Length: 263
Image (cartoon, rainbow, N blue to C red; front, top):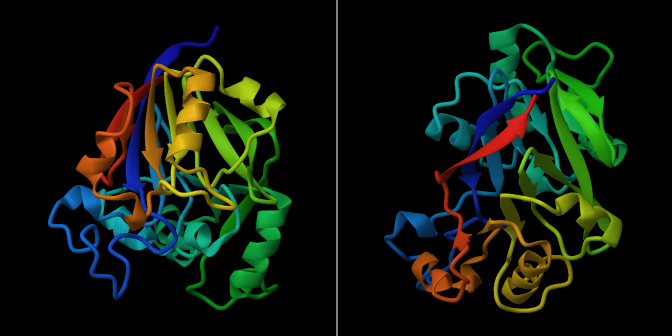
């Protein structure tokens, strides 16, 4: 019989592909002194009873690991192959050294193809010493396991690119989504907590804006929801919060959430 446990999610980054502040930008958000307006590239740390894993490893991965004081990381789950979600994988080396074995990366075949292109030196038949070593675990829509922990991969659409969201117990994490097919939405019913991307106020070809994210939240009816993957064009953290229902919040780097899951 499965037992209920309490897990923890930590937002390692809540920004877009450029992060916030944006290089050269002098807007009010990018020059804000509020730490909640300083956003690294989107990623989270999931801590379960005996397993810690990250979802995505963008260009800020090293900084995120140091800032969150991560001493144990057992796997990385990748949502898709864009650089702001995979570019930090070279720094998996630290965990290779610590564990003295290849590091588990859970991803689709399409993402693996991109990794072999971007990190070709890690996949050579006789790689030189000091390169990252990956243990690729293929996933697709549906249930898979990290150690003994069941996780459900949910396909969403980033314009025409399939992206994996993940449900762990009563929590779901979705980033870089514009649309979700009906059959996949059914997998997002009955949530306590939904984390969903909301780029800014304006229409975008591959990301939900505030209105679209709120419409999805209204449809799925989670008890609470958090917005992430936020652009400097959205406004300051405090300003965004005034435009949201009482059960919807703006995520920020370092925010921690608890959730229930079965194992």
